[in-house]
Image (cartoon, rainbow, N blue to C red):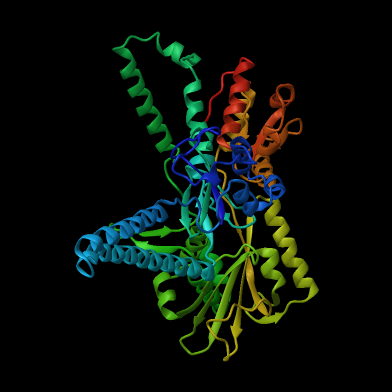
Amino acid sequence: MIIIEMECFQVSPQATIPHLHKSWLQVLTICADELGSIVEGHDDKKLKFYGGINGVAEKLCTSMTDGLTTTNSDMTLMILGVCVFVSLIVGIAKEGWPNGAHDGLVIVASILSVVFVTAVSDYRQSLQFRDLDKEKRKITIQELSLTGESEPVMVNSENPCMLSGTEVQDGSCKVMVATVGMRTQWDKLMATLSEGGDDETPLQLQLLLFSSEGLPLAVTLSLAFSMKKMKNDKALEVDLPTKASSLFSEIPASSGKLLLQTLFNNTGGEVIVNKYGKCEILGTPTETSLLEFGLSLGGDFQAERQAVKLVRVEPFNSKKKQTGVVVELPEGGLRAHTKDASEIVLAACNKVINSNGDVIPLDEESINNLKATIDQFASEALRTLCLAYMVLESGFSPDNPLPHSGHTCIGIAGIKDPVCPGVKESVAVCRSGGIPVRMVTGDNINTAQAIARECGILTDDGIAVEGPDFREKNQEELLQLIPKIQVMARSSPLDKHTLVKHLCTFGEVVAVR
């Protein structure tokens, strides 16, 4: 069960709903604003204070299984029961038995049919939810529309909150709606868009000096000149790295084959051919990065998938922090592939593939080298993944989970959104012209700081803050803090709006990308 906010309708705290059961109209022990702050801020401490999701459901006087059910069906059956009693008495009194009981028996049949259909429907629903609980599928959501971050977010018992305006990419679950209407973050964001007023920027004031006839021509010429310059500078082209193919020629053939097998089979992404005959990669940014790496090595996605038979798939689990598959090899035998959080997958390995392609025991020196690689990647704002495999015994059943130990480490992958060429130079030009540059992102604080330093945004005299801490500041603290902020991590759109609004009160002209 997770709790979400929905953009559907609004109910004031004092409102009553006439058709609900009278027990639901009792005074709630948690206010709407408090509940909204828990969901919006993903506040685990407050959620635990109220007893978790079960405690919140109890304070909202709702059921974790049935929700806010109405008593319309029970009332209908009661009315039909009264009709049966009246019909039988009147019918038998006038026409005797059994002719006078026909109408009453028809009503009894309708009651039995309603009860039967309702029971079958409830039973089928319980089976569906039971199957969902058995599958324990991951819930991934996309918060791109709210935070601008393309990386999907995992929703589970440890992070049970979802916001309106986000998109569910994968998974199924029950939800409990916590806030609606103007209490949702999406509607709050939409409301802030109308607060900007009609103030004109300095550029707009200068453009108004042009005549209405000359302005379109000036804009057209400016755009044409800019596009031509960007094309000459190759700013409109994307150069893909070509080092991967040379890397593949340097590793042993057996290791390369194993690497392609784990990249193309242990994945939630897909490689398809579009109508223009070009390959198109579908999936999350992490999966597409790994698949693109495999393709750049010269791998054939469809050939690798057809070469083996997929026996078992273990989706991402918040406790295990890894994904895995079991494949049946053409020559016979089973092989398990796993990947994800480096420190967890590496801890499950007792062997490693060396530079010669041989499988050797994972000794202390090898572990230290791998951990040093992981730390180096992390310091460079890379997300690290450990790729591993193991040969399964002949008695392994596809119904059994993957073993937690005995894996062989294939390697460590580092994934990063590269900074576009010229960004650092552009930031330096802005600073030399007296224009401070600030970075507002949904990334974690360490990644944001590393990227900001790489771009030249974060300097020694600047500070980096997180959105949750920023929201807790009062007005006086904000006035002292905002001029020093160069990086804001884990921020929401409302945090960005607050930052821009306060900068404008300082007399600054703010441009937001």
